[in-house]
Length: 192
Image (tube, rainbow, N blue to C red; front, top):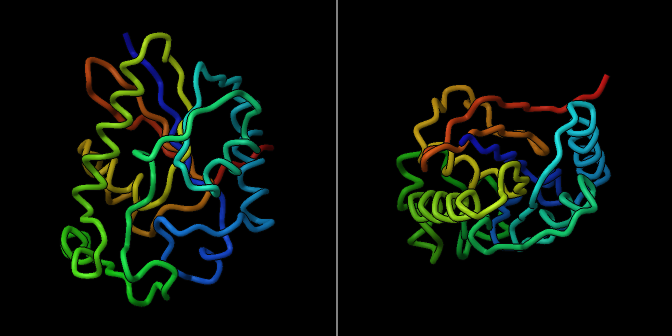
């Protein structure tokens, strides 16, 4: 039986606006980030999409985003956290690697995680969620890097994300027999 996962990137934060590396460190949603979360809520309402369960990263920017999308109870999970960038946390994005292959090991030298570790953590966490009983339509709020590595790990054509992932974007995925398939990507939810 097909199950649906709606994976959302949190709304814009102060560090996103300041172009700072934001992994396990946190910063608050901006007014734009709050509006992005509200647009996600409106999108789901307009399309009559409801959820059996909701999950988010333990980062406050994700729980704040989720609470603007729905008022249903939710669970915070460390497995949905962003990549850990070690000593580069909160530093300028100009210090970040832009090369996907280099990211596999680049942040290890700064005490951070490899992109493959994030990929594996996200796949394991989201698979466990979707294997739960009565989890036919699930909302999960996570991060740009974590979502990118998850999508890469499940074999998604990543060329559509060449310009990056927008804050508040929605990934619609089917889950069946242990396999995730991206069926839709809504980069900027807008309600008419």
